[in-house]
Image (cartoon, rainbow, N blue to C red):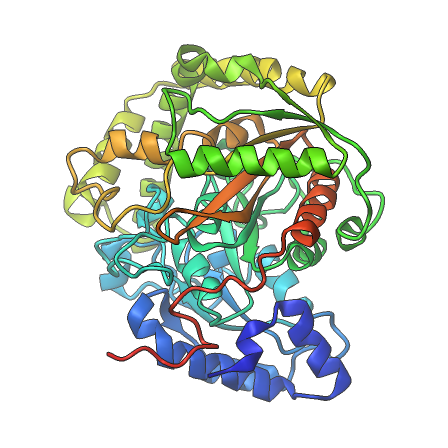
Length: 484
Protein backbone atom coordinates (compact mmCIF):
# COMPACT_ATOMS: atom_id res chain seq x y z
CA UNK A 1 0.00 0.00 0.00
CA UNK A 2 1.15 3.56 -0.75
CA UNK A 3 -0.39 6.43 1.22
CA UNK A 4 1.12 9.00 -1.17
CA UNK A 5 -1.20 7.59 -3.83
CA UNK A 6 -4.13 9.05 -1.88
CA UNK A 7 -2.83 12.60 -2.38
CA UNK A 8 -3.50 14.94 -5.26
CA UNK A 9 -0.63 16.74 -7.00
CA UNK A 10 -1.01 19.83 -4.81
CA UNK A 11 -0.66 17.78 -1.63
CA UNK A 12 2.31 15.83 -3.01
CA UNK A 13 4.07 19.08 -3.89
CA UNK A 14 3.40 20.36 -0.36
CA UNK A 15 5.15 17.28 1.08
CA UNK A 16 8.25 18.26 -0.88
CA UNK A 17 8.06 21.91 0.21
CA UNK A 18 7.80 20.87 3.87
CA UNK A 19 10.70 18.45 3.51
CA UNK A 20 8.55 15.46 4.47
CA UNK A 21 9.58 13.60 1.29
CA UNK A 22 12.23 14.20 -1.33
CA UNK A 23 11.58 14.58 -5.02
CA UNK A 24 13.47 11.34 -5.57
CA UNK A 25 11.16 9.52 -3.16
CA UNK A 26 8.07 10.86 -4.97
CA UNK A 27 9.31 9.69 -8.34
CA UNK A 28 10.48 6.30 -7.08
CA UNK A 29 7.14 5.66 -5.41
CA UNK A 30 5.32 6.41 -8.68
CA UNK A 31 7.64 4.07 -10.57
CA UNK A 32 6.94 1.34 -8.02
CA UNK A 33 3.18 1.87 -8.37
CA UNK A 34 3.34 1.62 -12.15
CA UNK A 35 5.45 -1.54 -11.97
CA UNK A 36 3.04 -3.07 -9.46
CA UNK A 37 -0.32 -2.24 -11.00
CA UNK A 38 -0.03 -1.36 -14.67
CA UNK A 39 0.01 -5.00 -15.67
CA UNK A 40 -3.66 -4.99 -14.68
CA UNK A 41 -4.44 -1.78 -16.55
CA UNK A 42 -2.22 -1.40 -19.62
CA UNK A 43 -2.40 2.35 -19.12
CA UNK A 44 1.32 3.18 -19.43
CA UNK A 45 2.66 2.02 -22.78
CA UNK A 46 6.07 3.75 -22.78
CA UNK A 47 8.04 4.07 -19.55
CA UNK A 48 10.93 6.48 -19.07
CA UNK A 49 12.03 5.49 -15.60
CA UNK A 50 15.76 5.94 -16.16
CA UNK A 51 15.20 9.34 -17.74
CA UNK A 52 12.93 10.36 -14.86
CA UNK A 53 15.54 9.33 -12.32
CA UNK A 54 18.10 11.45 -14.12
CA UNK A 55 15.76 14.42 -14.53
CA UNK A 56 14.43 14.54 -10.97
CA UNK A 57 17.73 15.91 -9.72
CA UNK A 58 17.37 18.87 -12.09
CA UNK A 59 13.66 19.53 -11.47
CA UNK A 60 13.34 23.26 -10.89
CA UNK A 61 13.57 23.94 -7.18
CA UNK A 62 10.77 26.19 -6.01
CA UNK A 63 8.53 25.30 -8.94
CA UNK A 64 4.91 24.72 -7.86
CA UNK A 65 5.03 20.97 -8.54
CA UNK A 66 8.71 20.23 -8.03
CA UNK A 67 9.28 16.45 -8.20
CA UNK A 68 5.65 15.46 -8.67
CA UNK A 69 5.40 12.48 -11.09
CA UNK A 70 3.46 12.98 -14.32
CA UNK A 71 2.38 10.96 -17.34
CA UNK A 72 1.85 12.35 -20.84
CA UNK A 73 -0.64 11.02 -23.35
CA UNK A 74 0.96 9.50 -26.46
CA UNK A 75 -0.99 11.82 -28.75
CA UNK A 76 -1.30 15.50 -29.57
CA UNK A 77 0.88 18.35 -28.40
CA UNK A 78 1.20 16.84 -24.93
CA UNK A 79 2.75 13.72 -26.43
CA UNK A 80 5.47 15.56 -28.37
CA UNK A 81 8.30 14.84 -25.96
CA UNK A 82 11.65 15.12 -27.67
CA UNK A 83 13.51 11.83 -27.92
CA UNK A 84 10.55 9.66 -26.89
CA UNK A 85 8.36 7.22 -28.83
CA UNK A 86 5.35 8.91 -30.38
CA UNK A 87 3.09 6.25 -31.88
CA UNK A 88 -0.44 7.64 -31.40
CA UNK A 89 -1.93 4.14 -31.11
CA UNK A 90 -0.76 3.28 -34.64
CA UNK A 91 0.89 -0.05 -35.38
CA UNK A 92 2.99 1.20 -38.31
CA UNK A 93 4.66 3.82 -36.12
CA UNK A 94 5.06 1.20 -33.39
CA UNK A 95 6.65 -1.30 -35.73
CA UNK A 96 8.99 1.36 -37.12
CA UNK A 97 10.06 2.32 -33.61
CA UNK A 98 9.33 5.95 -34.44
CA UNK A 99 10.84 8.49 -32.03
CA UNK A 100 9.84 12.15 -32.06
CA UNK A 101 12.80 14.48 -32.64
CA UNK A 102 11.15 17.86 -33.11
CA UNK A 103 11.89 19.39 -29.70
CA UNK A 104 9.48 19.51 -26.76
CA UNK A 105 6.08 21.04 -27.41
CA UNK A 106 5.08 24.10 -25.41
CA UNK A 107 2.77 21.88 -23.33
CA UNK A 108 5.66 19.59 -22.37
CA UNK A 109 7.93 22.57 -21.69
CA UNK A 110 5.36 24.17 -19.39
CA UNK A 111 4.84 20.87 -17.54
CA UNK A 112 8.57 20.58 -16.96
CA UNK A 113 8.92 24.23 -16.00
CA UNK A 114 6.29 23.62 -13.30
CA UNK A 115 8.59 20.98 -11.79
CA UNK A 116 6.78 17.81 -12.88
CA UNK A 117 8.88 14.75 -13.70
CA UNK A 118 7.56 12.75 -16.66
CA UNK A 119 7.71 9.03 -15.91
CA UNK A 120 6.00 7.65 -19.02
CA UNK A 121 3.39 7.92 -21.76
CA UNK A 122 -0.17 6.63 -21.74
CA UNK A 123 -2.27 4.52 -24.06
CA UNK A 124 -4.64 6.03 -26.62
CA UNK A 125 -6.82 4.73 -29.48
CA UNK A 126 -5.39 5.06 -32.96
CA UNK A 127 -4.99 8.77 -33.74
CA UNK A 128 -7.56 9.45 -31.00
CA UNK A 129 -10.50 8.50 -33.22
CA UNK A 130 -12.49 6.37 -30.79
CA UNK A 131 -14.47 6.80 -27.59
CA UNK A 132 -12.71 3.75 -26.12
CA UNK A 133 -9.01 3.03 -25.59
CA UNK A 134 -8.63 -0.28 -27.40
CA UNK A 135 -5.95 0.20 -30.08
CA UNK A 136 -4.79 -2.81 -32.08
CA UNK A 137 -1.21 -1.54 -31.70
CA UNK A 138 -0.96 -1.70 -27.91
CA UNK A 139 -4.09 -3.45 -26.69
CA UNK A 140 -6.93 -2.22 -24.49
CA UNK A 141 -6.63 -0.19 -21.33
CA UNK A 142 -8.71 -1.56 -18.45
CA UNK A 143 -10.85 0.56 -16.15
CA UNK A 144 -9.59 0.28 -12.54
CA UNK A 145 -13.21 0.32 -11.31
CA UNK A 146 -13.84 -2.90 -13.25
CA UNK A 147 -11.10 -4.21 -15.56
CA UNK A 148 -13.69 -5.72 -17.89
CA UNK A 149 -14.96 -2.20 -18.64
CA UNK A 150 -13.65 0.56 -20.86
CA UNK A 151 -11.97 3.64 -19.36
CA UNK A 152 -13.38 5.48 -22.43
CA UNK A 153 -11.15 7.43 -24.79
CA UNK A 154 -9.16 8.86 -26.15
CA UNK A 155 -7.38 9.81 -22.91
CA UNK A 156 -8.28 6.45 -21.39
CA UNK A 157 -4.71 5.51 -20.48
CA UNK A 158 -4.19 8.77 -18.59
CA UNK A 159 -7.53 8.47 -16.80
CA UNK A 160 -6.99 4.85 -15.75
CA UNK A 161 -3.52 5.70 -14.42
CA UNK A 162 -4.74 8.66 -12.35
CA UNK A 163 -7.83 6.83 -11.09
CA UNK A 164 -5.63 3.94 -9.90
CA UNK A 165 -3.27 6.32 -8.09
CA UNK A 166 -0.23 5.64 -10.29
CA UNK A 167 0.28 9.40 -10.63
CA UNK A 168 -1.86 12.28 -9.31
CA UNK A 169 -2.31 14.00 -12.67
CA UNK A 170 -1.74 13.09 -16.31
CA UNK A 171 -1.85 14.90 -19.62
CA UNK A 172 -4.93 14.57 -21.79
CA UNK A 173 -6.46 16.09 -24.89
CA UNK A 174 -10.04 16.53 -26.02
CA UNK A 175 -11.22 16.67 -29.63
CA UNK A 176 -14.73 15.30 -29.11
CA UNK A 177 -14.94 14.46 -25.42
CA UNK A 178 -11.57 12.76 -24.94
CA UNK A 179 -10.89 14.38 -21.55
CA UNK A 180 -14.44 14.40 -20.23
CA UNK A 181 -15.47 10.89 -21.30
CA UNK A 182 -12.56 9.14 -19.51
CA UNK A 183 -13.00 11.44 -16.52
CA UNK A 184 -16.60 10.30 -16.20
CA UNK A 185 -15.80 6.63 -16.79
CA UNK A 186 -12.94 6.62 -14.26
CA UNK A 187 -14.31 8.96 -11.57
CA UNK A 188 -12.09 12.00 -12.18
CA UNK A 189 -12.24 15.73 -12.84
CA UNK A 190 -11.87 16.53 -16.54
CA UNK A 191 -11.92 20.07 -17.92
CA UNK A 192 -12.06 20.73 -21.65
CA UNK A 193 -10.75 24.26 -21.98
CA UNK A 194 -11.85 26.97 -24.37
CA UNK A 195 -10.44 26.93 -27.87
CA UNK A 196 -7.13 28.79 -27.81
CA UNK A 197 -6.67 28.58 -24.03
CA UNK A 198 -3.70 26.17 -24.21
CA UNK A 199 -1.24 26.40 -27.08
CA UNK A 200 -0.50 23.35 -29.25
CA UNK A 201 2.65 25.01 -30.58
CA UNK A 202 5.09 24.97 -32.07
CA UNK A 203 4.31 21.79 -34.01
CA UNK A 204 0.56 22.39 -34.55
CA UNK A 205 -1.68 25.39 -34.95
CA UNK A 206 -5.34 24.42 -34.70
CA UNK A 207 -5.49 20.61 -34.28
CA UNK A 208 -8.66 19.09 -35.72
CA UNK A 209 -9.68 22.49 -37.02
CA UNK A 210 -9.41 24.01 -33.54
CA UNK A 211 -11.64 21.38 -31.94
CA UNK A 212 -8.87 19.52 -30.09
CA UNK A 213 -7.50 21.13 -26.94
CA UNK A 214 -4.88 20.13 -24.37
CA UNK A 215 -5.25 19.86 -20.62
CA UNK A 216 -5.26 16.97 -18.11
CA UNK A 217 -7.24 14.65 -15.85
CA UNK A 218 -7.03 15.00 -12.06
CA UNK A 219 -8.65 13.90 -8.82
CA UNK A 220 -9.47 17.39 -7.52
CA UNK A 221 -10.77 20.73 -8.75
CA UNK A 222 -7.78 22.54 -7.26
CA UNK A 223 -5.36 20.42 -9.30
CA UNK A 224 -7.39 21.07 -12.44
CA UNK A 225 -7.27 24.81 -11.76
CA UNK A 226 -3.57 24.80 -10.91
CA UNK A 227 -2.78 22.85 -14.07
CA UNK A 228 -4.66 25.41 -16.12
CA UNK A 229 -2.39 28.07 -14.64
CA UNK A 230 0.58 25.92 -15.66
CA UNK A 231 -0.59 25.32 -19.23
CA UNK A 232 -2.49 28.46 -20.21
CA UNK A 233 -0.97 31.20 -22.30
CA UNK A 234 -0.23 32.02 -25.91
CA UNK A 235 2.90 31.05 -27.80
CA UNK A 236 4.34 33.04 -30.73
CA UNK A 237 2.23 32.62 -33.84
CA UNK A 238 -0.79 31.01 -32.20
CA UNK A 239 -3.74 31.49 -34.59
CA UNK A 240 -6.39 31.52 -31.83
CA UNK A 241 -5.92 32.90 -28.31
CA UNK A 242 -8.63 32.72 -25.65
CA UNK A 243 -9.42 35.84 -23.60
CA UNK A 244 -6.94 36.49 -20.81
CA UNK A 245 -7.86 35.58 -17.24
CA UNK A 246 -7.94 38.47 -14.75
CA UNK A 247 -6.35 36.35 -12.01
CA UNK A 248 -4.95 32.84 -11.50
CA UNK A 249 -7.40 30.02 -12.12
CA UNK A 250 -6.39 28.47 -8.81
CA UNK A 251 -7.79 31.55 -7.09
CA UNK A 252 -11.10 30.98 -8.87
CA UNK A 253 -11.36 27.54 -7.26
CA UNK A 254 -11.56 29.21 -3.85
CA UNK A 255 -13.93 32.01 -4.90
CA UNK A 256 -17.67 31.70 -4.15
CA UNK A 257 -19.55 31.72 -7.46
CA UNK A 258 -22.63 33.61 -6.35
CA UNK A 259 -26.05 32.57 -7.68
CA UNK A 260 -25.98 31.39 -11.30
CA UNK A 261 -28.66 30.67 -13.89
CA UNK A 262 -28.38 26.99 -14.79
CA UNK A 263 -30.15 25.18 -17.59
CA UNK A 264 -30.55 21.44 -17.32
CA UNK A 265 -30.90 18.66 -19.88
CA UNK A 266 -31.12 14.95 -19.18
CA UNK A 267 -31.86 13.45 -22.61
CA UNK A 268 -29.46 12.93 -25.49
CA UNK A 269 -29.63 14.14 -29.06
CA UNK A 270 -31.46 11.04 -30.23
CA UNK A 271 -33.42 9.97 -27.18
CA UNK A 272 -33.25 9.10 -23.47
CA UNK A 273 -30.04 8.12 -21.70
CA UNK A 274 -29.31 5.50 -19.03
CA UNK A 275 -31.42 6.03 -15.92
CA UNK A 276 -28.33 6.35 -13.69
CA UNK A 277 -27.00 9.18 -15.85
CA UNK A 278 -30.23 11.16 -15.92
CA UNK A 279 -30.74 10.60 -12.19
CA UNK A 280 -27.24 11.96 -11.51
CA UNK A 281 -28.09 15.20 -13.31
CA UNK A 282 -31.37 15.57 -11.48
CA UNK A 283 -29.63 15.04 -8.13
CA UNK A 284 -26.89 17.58 -8.94
CA UNK A 285 -29.54 20.01 -10.13
CA UNK A 286 -31.21 19.76 -6.72
CA UNK A 287 -27.84 20.27 -5.05
CA UNK A 288 -27.21 23.40 -7.11
CA UNK A 289 -30.61 24.76 -6.09
CA UNK A 290 -29.79 24.08 -2.44
CA UNK A 291 -26.56 26.02 -2.95
CA UNK A 292 -28.51 29.05 -4.11
CA UNK A 293 -28.46 28.70 -7.88
CA UNK A 294 -31.47 29.10 -10.15
CA UNK A 295 -31.95 25.80 -11.98
CA UNK A 296 -34.50 25.53 -14.74
CA UNK A 297 -35.29 23.31 -17.66
CA UNK A 298 -33.90 24.55 -20.92
CA UNK A 299 -30.92 24.26 -23.18
CA UNK A 300 -29.66 25.69 -26.47
CA UNK A 301 -32.30 24.43 -28.89
CA UNK A 302 -29.81 24.64 -31.76
CA UNK A 303 -27.99 21.55 -30.48
CA UNK A 304 -31.06 19.54 -31.46
CA UNK A 305 -30.66 20.70 -35.07
CA UNK A 306 -28.65 17.59 -35.89
CA UNK A 307 -28.92 18.12 -39.65
CA UNK A 308 -27.46 21.62 -39.58
CA UNK A 309 -24.62 20.61 -37.30
CA UNK A 310 -23.64 17.37 -38.93
CA UNK A 311 -23.77 18.66 -42.49
CA UNK A 312 -20.69 20.62 -41.53
CA UNK A 313 -19.16 18.35 -38.91
CA UNK A 314 -18.97 15.11 -40.90
CA UNK A 315 -16.90 16.35 -43.87
CA UNK A 316 -14.68 18.41 -41.56
CA UNK A 317 -14.06 15.42 -39.30
CA UNK A 318 -13.29 13.15 -42.26
CA UNK A 319 -10.84 15.71 -43.67
CA UNK A 320 -9.17 15.94 -40.27
CA UNK A 321 -8.70 12.17 -40.22
CA UNK A 322 -7.06 12.33 -43.64
CA UNK A 323 -4.70 15.00 -42.36
CA UNK A 324 -3.75 12.82 -39.37
CA UNK A 325 -3.11 9.83 -41.64
CA UNK A 326 -0.93 12.03 -43.85
CA UNK A 327 1.02 12.99 -40.73
CA UNK A 328 1.77 9.33 -40.05
CA UNK A 329 3.05 8.99 -43.60
CA UNK A 330 5.36 11.96 -43.13
CA UNK A 331 6.73 10.51 -39.90
CA UNK A 332 7.30 7.12 -41.52
CA UNK A 333 8.90 8.72 -44.56
CA UNK A 334 6.87 6.60 -46.97
CA UNK A 335 3.45 6.17 -48.50
CA UNK A 336 0.91 4.42 -46.29
CA UNK A 337 -1.75 1.88 -47.14
CA UNK A 338 -4.80 0.38 -45.46
CA UNK A 339 -2.53 -2.25 -43.90
CA UNK A 340 -0.91 0.47 -41.76
CA UNK A 341 -4.17 1.41 -39.98
CA UNK A 342 -7.24 0.02 -38.31
CA UNK A 343 -10.04 -0.34 -40.83
CA UNK A 344 -12.25 2.45 -39.48
CA UNK A 345 -9.39 4.97 -39.47
CA UNK A 346 -8.53 4.19 -43.07
CA UNK A 347 -12.16 4.33 -44.20
CA UNK A 348 -12.63 7.74 -42.58
CA UNK A 349 -9.40 9.01 -44.14
CA UNK A 350 -10.56 7.80 -47.55
CA UNK A 351 -13.75 9.80 -47.09
CA UNK A 352 -11.70 12.80 -46.01
CA UNK A 353 -9.50 12.68 -49.09
CA UNK A 354 -12.66 12.96 -51.19
CA UNK A 355 -13.67 16.23 -49.50
CA UNK A 356 -12.86 19.11 -51.84
CA UNK A 357 -11.57 22.50 -50.79
CA UNK A 358 -14.85 24.27 -51.55
CA UNK A 359 -16.86 21.65 -49.67
CA UNK A 360 -14.55 21.87 -46.65
CA UNK A 361 -14.63 25.68 -46.46
CA UNK A 362 -18.41 25.64 -46.82
CA UNK A 363 -18.65 23.02 -44.04
CA UNK A 364 -16.50 25.10 -41.71
CA UNK A 365 -18.67 28.16 -42.32
CA UNK A 366 -21.79 26.09 -41.62
CA UNK A 367 -20.29 24.99 -38.31
CA UNK A 368 -19.57 28.61 -37.35
CA UNK A 369 -23.14 29.66 -38.13
CA UNK A 370 -24.52 26.74 -36.14
CA UNK A 371 -22.14 27.47 -33.25
CA UNK A 372 -23.34 31.07 -33.08
CA UNK A 373 -26.90 29.83 -32.65
CA UNK A 374 -25.78 27.52 -29.83
CA UNK A 375 -23.68 30.15 -28.09
CA UNK A 376 -26.49 32.72 -28.17
CA UNK A 377 -28.25 30.78 -25.38
CA UNK A 378 -25.61 31.96 -22.91
CA UNK A 379 -26.81 35.55 -23.22
CA UNK A 380 -29.57 34.59 -20.77
CA UNK A 381 -27.89 31.74 -18.87
CA UNK A 382 -24.62 31.07 -17.10
CA UNK A 383 -24.27 27.29 -17.16
CA UNK A 384 -25.75 24.20 -18.74
CA UNK A 385 -25.91 20.96 -16.73
CA UNK A 386 -26.04 17.58 -18.53
CA UNK A 387 -24.80 14.04 -18.06
CA UNK A 388 -21.24 13.65 -19.30
CA UNK A 389 -22.07 10.31 -20.90
CA UNK A 390 -25.22 8.55 -21.98
CA UNK A 391 -24.32 5.33 -20.13
CA UNK A 392 -21.94 4.16 -17.42
CA UNK A 393 -18.72 2.62 -18.83
CA UNK A 394 -19.68 -0.46 -20.89
CA UNK A 395 -17.65 -3.65 -21.32
CA UNK A 396 -14.51 -3.59 -23.43
CA UNK A 397 -15.39 -4.48 -27.01
CA UNK A 398 -18.77 -2.76 -26.90
CA UNK A 399 -17.42 0.44 -28.46
CA UNK A 400 -14.47 -0.95 -30.44
CA UNK A 401 -14.50 -0.71 -34.22
CA UNK A 402 -14.46 -4.50 -34.55
CA UNK A 403 -18.01 -4.44 -33.21
CA UNK A 404 -20.41 -4.01 -36.17
CA UNK A 405 -22.67 -1.87 -33.97
CA UNK A 406 -19.84 0.37 -32.74
CA UNK A 407 -21.18 3.53 -34.39
CA UNK A 408 -24.66 3.27 -32.86
CA UNK A 409 -23.12 2.33 -29.53
CA UNK A 410 -20.86 5.38 -29.74
CA UNK A 411 -23.80 7.72 -30.28
CA UNK A 412 -25.60 6.13 -27.34
CA UNK A 413 -22.51 6.33 -25.13
CA UNK A 414 -21.51 9.94 -25.84
CA UNK A 415 -24.33 12.19 -27.04
CA UNK A 416 -23.30 15.27 -25.03
CA UNK A 417 -19.58 15.96 -25.35
CA UNK A 418 -18.62 16.71 -28.95
CA UNK A 419 -20.95 19.72 -29.35
CA UNK A 420 -18.68 21.84 -27.18
CA UNK A 421 -15.56 21.00 -29.17
CA UNK A 422 -17.21 22.40 -32.26
CA UNK A 423 -18.46 25.54 -30.50
CA UNK A 424 -15.13 25.96 -28.67
CA UNK A 425 -16.73 26.37 -25.24
CA UNK A 426 -15.28 25.07 -21.96
CA UNK A 427 -16.94 22.13 -20.22
CA UNK A 428 -16.05 20.15 -17.10
CA UNK A 429 -16.96 16.63 -15.99
CA UNK A 430 -17.26 16.05 -12.25
CA UNK A 431 -17.43 12.64 -10.48
CA UNK A 432 -20.56 13.34 -8.49
CA UNK A 433 -22.44 10.06 -8.85
CA UNK A 434 -22.10 6.28 -8.90
CA UNK A 435 -24.21 3.90 -10.96
CA UNK A 436 -26.42 1.19 -9.50
CA UNK A 437 -23.60 -1.32 -10.08
CA UNK A 438 -20.90 0.82 -8.50
CA UNK A 439 -19.35 2.51 -11.55
CA UNK A 440 -18.52 6.22 -11.79
CA UNK A 441 -21.05 8.55 -13.40
CA UNK A 442 -19.95 12.07 -14.28
CA UNK A 443 -22.04 15.17 -14.74
CA UNK A 444 -21.01 18.00 -17.04
CA UNK A 445 -21.21 21.76 -16.70
CA UNK A 446 -20.80 23.94 -19.80
CA UNK A 447 -20.05 27.66 -19.74
CA UNK A 448 -19.78 30.41 -22.32
CA UNK A 449 -16.56 30.73 -24.29
CA UNK A 450 -13.67 31.84 -22.11
CA UNK A 451 -15.47 31.26 -18.79
CA UNK A 452 -13.32 28.56 -17.20
CA UNK A 453 -13.29 30.80 -14.15
CA UNK A 454 -17.01 30.26 -13.59
CA UNK A 455 -16.77 26.51 -14.18
CA UNK A 456 -14.00 26.20 -11.59
CA UNK A 457 -15.89 28.25 -8.99
CA UNK A 458 -19.03 26.15 -9.26
CA UNK A 459 -17.08 22.88 -9.55
CA UNK A 460 -15.19 23.66 -6.35
CA UNK A 461 -18.45 24.53 -4.62
CA UNK A 462 -19.93 21.18 -5.63
CA UNK A 463 -16.79 19.33 -4.54
CA UNK A 464 -17.03 20.93 -1.10
CA UNK A 465 -20.74 20.16 -0.82
CA UNK A 466 -20.44 16.56 -2.00
CA UNK A 467 -16.79 15.43 -1.73
CA UNK A 468 -15.57 12.57 -3.87
CA UNK A 469 -12.04 12.21 -2.49
CA UNK A 470 -12.99 9.04 -0.59
CA UNK A 471 -14.23 7.24 -3.69
CA UNK A 472 -11.47 5.00 -5.01
CA UNK A 473 -11.64 2.05 -7.41
CA UNK A 474 -10.88 -1.55 -6.43
CA UNK A 475 -7.60 -1.36 -8.33
CA UNK A 476 -5.78 1.44 -6.51
CA UNK A 477 -2.25 1.86 -5.20
CA UNK A 478 -3.52 2.64 -1.68
CA UNK A 479 -5.15 -0.78 -1.46
CA UNK A 480 -3.50 -4.17 -1.04
CA UNK A 481 -2.23 -5.41 -4.39
CA UNK A 482 -4.88 -7.53 -6.14
CA UNK A 483 -4.03 -11.17 -6.56
CA UNK A 484 -3.00 -12.19 -10.05
